[in-house]
Image 1 (spheres, rainbow, N blue to C red):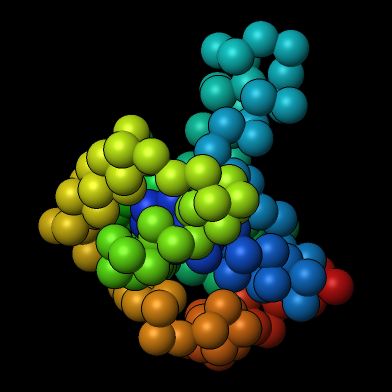
Image 2 (tube, rainbow, N blue to C red):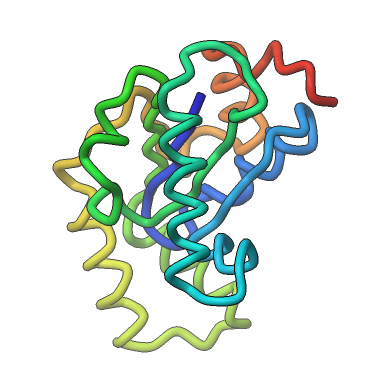
Length: 160
């Protein structure tokens, strides 16, 4: 089973993924974390793509279960996205909420390039749909993690 969490910066993807990891032990991969799998990027990407394919084929719990956190689905192989064991989870919030969160992360140092980046990220996911979708301005990360766990087999994960 492969859970793909996607959405703009500061939408809560990593926070929710980490909460699920803490509860279940399901491994979480964020962005290019896969680079730690090998000494060179090409080999690391190859190893990681194999892991993604294995997880994506499993509809049931297996050692291949994982969560992958990305800003958009565009960077992923279409064959993986359409695999039977994939659940796509879209996390988003209003642009003002994202800006406030980002500025807080930067200790109030917002600027036009950051605003433009967040706008671009929201635009990138506008037409992307998830099997589950959460407005993180309206639902807490803990409630989202619980909802995802209860609606998927991850909530019955025997890892931890």
